[in-house]
Image (tube, rainbow, N blue to C red; front, side, top):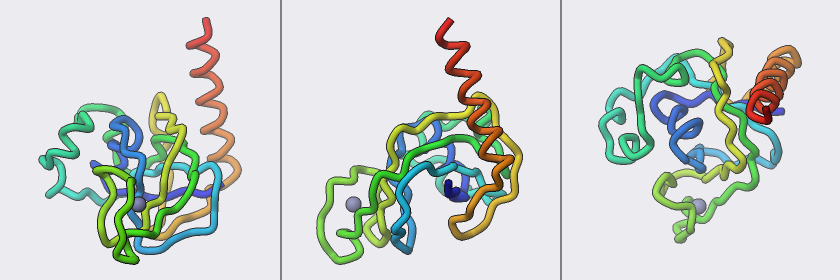
Amino acid sequence: MQAISVRQPWAFAIARGGKTVYNHPLPTAYRGPLLIHASMRVDLGSCDSPLIRSAGWDPRDPLATLGAVIALADLSGVCSRAVQGGDCDCGPWAEPSAHHWRLANVRALPRPIVALGRMEPWEPRPSLVAKVHQMLATTAAEQGH
Ligand SMILES: [Zn+2]
C-alpha cells in the first residue's frame, strides 16, 4: 500500500467530488491501493475555483479536515502525455505540466483517521492500513443491512 498527501481542498475533491486524477511532477511504477491523506497545508486560492465548487467543497464536512487519511483509491495508471506536450483524455482535473496519476474505485472513509503525511508518496504503517480496512468493512456491513 502507498499513500499520498494532498492539500485541501483537492484531497476533498478526490474523496467526495469525483476528482480521479492526481497531478504530480513525477510518474510512478506503483499500481494498486492508494491512501488519500489530507495534508496540513491548504491551497486557499483554490477554494473558490469553479472546479472545486463543482466538487461540492464544504468546509464543514468531516472529510474537509487537515492531517488525516480520508479515502482509499486504486492507482490504476499514470498518464505522461501532457508532460510530453501531447493531448490526453484525463479530463478537467488534469493539469498540463504534470503526470496524471489515474485513480479508480475511490472510497471515502466514514470519518477521517488522523495521521502524519509526507511531501512525497509514502508507505503507511500496517496499523493505519488495518484501521482503514476495518472502517471500510464496517461501513460495507452497515450498508448491507
Ligand atoms: Zn493525462
